[in-house]
Image (cartoon, rainbow over all chains, first blue to last red; front, side):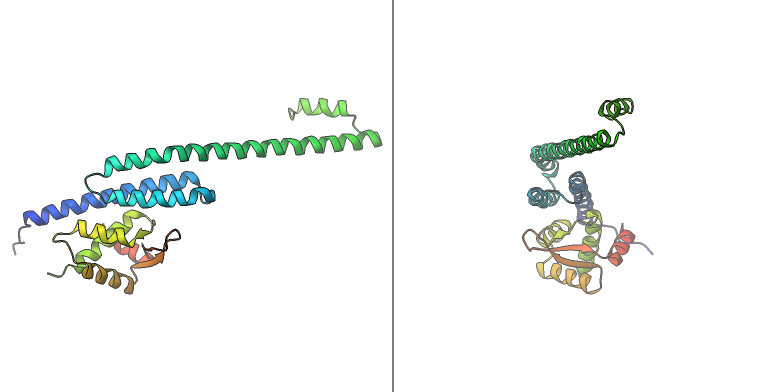
Length: 136
Length: 85
């Protein structure tokens, strides 16, 4: 049995549909990429921006003619936000490292004070040991 | 010709490509109108969504930001969408 020939309109519709699906997939990948970089629990101040970004990307992914340019535009708009988020993360890591160091110094001071009372390790000896262990 | 099966197929395929990202209802309608020729009526689009939800292929939710309805695939819907490609 012969299959009916697909009309030009049907072929055009199919091409359009496949193109739209590809753009939707591209938009989704871009959303996922941004949201992956911010992690599962982004700072509250960024949550709204991330959601707006998602809506924009999904909207543009359906604008068949303009999508590539608009994707780039949205990506560029988010760059300062990404930079800010990266700086925030670095600041938090630095603060954590500083706190850790302060805690270690306090612990060492307390240990040294106890040591000098009951004749255990002297502070100079403790420092020497720590230098050798590269803890300072 | 009944456009509803075509609409349903497109919605499932598009949601699969969204990979779990909730699809705002208004954008879904917009995409369906662009994807099919002749352009389907809103009533047909609504009917297709209702059928997909009733038969357990998609599930609706509300966006946290603006309370707008959104759609995602259920496991059954994902399985079906993968068959459609």
